[in-house]
Amino acid sequence: MSLLTPPLSLYVHLPWCVRKCPYCDFNSHEARGALPFAAYVDALIADLDQDLPLAWGRVVHSVFFGGGTPSLFPAEAIDAFLQQASARLRIAPGAEITLETNPGTAEHGRFEGYLAAGVNRLSFGIQSFDDGCLQRLGRIHDSREADSAVKLAQDAGFDNINLDLMYALPEQTLAMAVEDVERALALQPVHLSHYQLTLEPNTVFAARPPQGVPGLDESWDIQEACQARIAQAGFEHYEVSAYARPGRQSQHNLNYWRFGDYLGIGAGAHGKLTLGASQSVLRRWKVKHPTEYLVKAGSPASIGGDETLTAARLPFDYMLNALRLHEGFSLEAFEARTGLPRASIAPQLRQAIERGWLTVDPAGRVRPTELGRRFTNDVIELFLADD
Image (tube, rainbow, N blue to C red):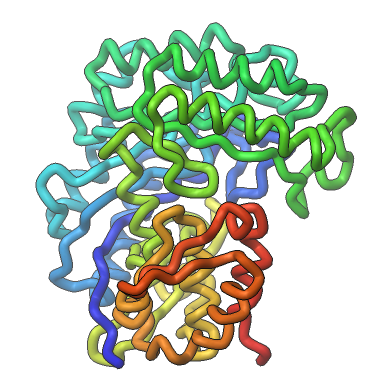
């Protein structure tokens, strides 16, 4: 089997936020004093220059600014980065360019600047429209600011907008969760991310769990009720926690889930690249702390680690992504993206089919069943190597 080089994306990590949320396990750091915007853009470009040989000549199909809170960066800094990146990379015409934004950092005039810089998709970290829930989550915005920020972005000309919502929040009832969905739908986004609060290791919530978090049965009831309401509004449920109007799926995230390639630049950023000559899959990540990153960016010392995936590891990594999608994957795509024969996963597929978790149609498309979607982690674990 030979690998076919998959589409390439660019992930840019902007690591600062106003305040670290107690549930957050991302590489984010509270801003203390003036942020070094220009110096960080210079570091990003040095980082990109170092990684360019891994993706020389390839077209970039999407760009994603994640964080942290990327909207802390002024439009001028985003513009400076995109201009310099465009001089080094072949960014496809009309490529999806997403910027994550926090309603608490949205300023009038900034959205016009982002649009002019080339950003054409915004992802708002709303989480809830209930002010009590927002306070318990440690968010810096309230529901009024959330409404206002989205409308400001729409007035500026953005029509490709995602809203992030969380459910099973401390002291949240089913009615409150459905009301969050109603409030989100009223703002007419084209994409919704709707995911359950989890108490991740090394977070404040893990150390001091909040009171009143709904139990498993209550959480499932909330999830089902919200899914039904989002579907009723005409959104396709295309990934575990992602819903989109027809044709408005997140192209960047689809590339992740289809086991595409991505350059990862910025403090703590992760990348995954298929290297043509050796036909190997490389994962690379950068040092996490912004201060260290600013000093080391562009030098080998900025690389937190490189890992070439073994043949035994590839099926698990592939399924970790592909089985999140309702469309599943084709056995042909599995072979093309991993370089492995379909026979290498036949025993695990057989086991998953017997358990009612997956189906395989005559054309070789593997899809999770309704039961399989409830037990996604168990399905994926079948493909974990024994080594």
